[in-house]
Length: 294
Image (cartoon, rainbow, N blue to C red; front, top):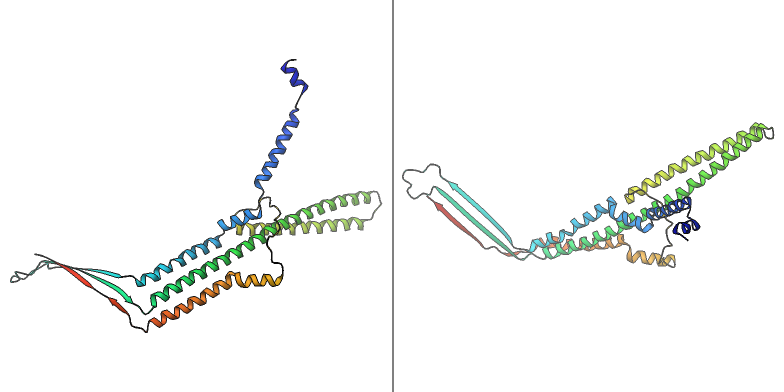
């Protein structure tokens, strides 16, 4: 038996081969474009402008700590004075034509009445409050993202349901018209079928508009258009009772934590204000260099 005979005994129709490739490509395409809720939240964390602005504001808030610490560091000042006499008197044999004076001053704070210490404490408390506010912003954006994700899935299902309803009512209208032609139904029956179809088409337009609004909200939060969203998984680690949920919120809510840190920062500000009435001690050595040129 030749190789050609073997091929003839085990044929693979071209149509079946192409159909298999098409089904495989469709499956891979659907799997590649399917998006989970976790991926949507990750995109929102990376792309949401509100979160980006909040993180940038927190980075600026972090810099207040070294700024307040600088109040307890030595202060160095340098001054330069340059003078030049364009016209010298005839009897001024020892007057310089040019005079340069360079002076420096070093101020070393020794005691500030606790102003620097309390200012640093207040700045640190505000950093912690800002971090809590950032977590609250993240939680709010994530909650909105989950809502937008579910709204898209819901509105897609409603649109599909209305599309099927419109298709059924169009078939029903055609059947009613055919029965009217043979005298089995009246004109009123046809009018009622047309009214039901018109109402269903209006509901379909409303559902499509709601879907467009949901998709735009999703884009605003996530930064990308939704594509083939998967059903979300069950929520893990939910509180067992409402009382437990309230207890967790009282101990872990970032808004409450931010408010507590703001109170601590205000108390530290009181220490800064009190320091203004106390004496301050510092060591201000200074020195200078003079240069005369004839």
